[in-house]
Image 1 (tube, rainbow, N blue to C red):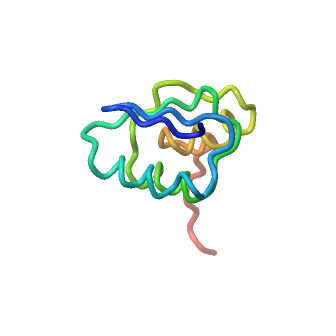
Image 2 (image 1 turned 135 degrees about the vertical axis):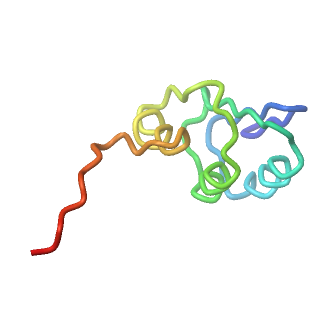
Length: 91
């Protein structure tokens, strides 16, 4: 089962598809201080990613999947991981 919802923690496993987005959003809406475990997740539908970005739950376990760990997790934790470039004045 790709989505396991408990009282305060959601566990996302394997392939999280569009079918899990609606229950995830409903759970995020009603849960105070939600936590999400991504350790066993290896694919996250963009709708689920958008829900996580919107509700900003605490991520309790990082995904072991390399792409999710390096490219998606920093977004969920509020950092793109890239360098911050100073703004320049137009010429």
